Length: 67
Image (cartoon, rainbow, N blue to C red):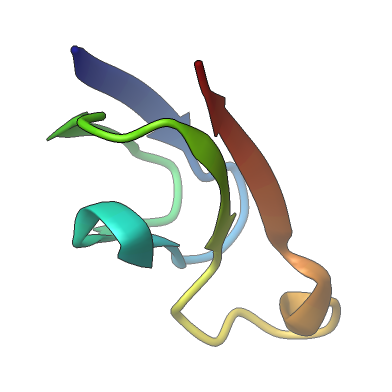
């Protein structure tokens, strides 16, 4: 299935990386970016901020579950 995710940064420039699906995008401060990819495998996958954005950067990660 094709997955579309809209991401908005309200403060500084951030990144969105989802290595298992070869996704990497920069989200500029105050803007919304749409990331699109094909989820062609099931499982639990980690995404994270791949642009240094200041304090708390190391904890900016989440989980995508594909069933």
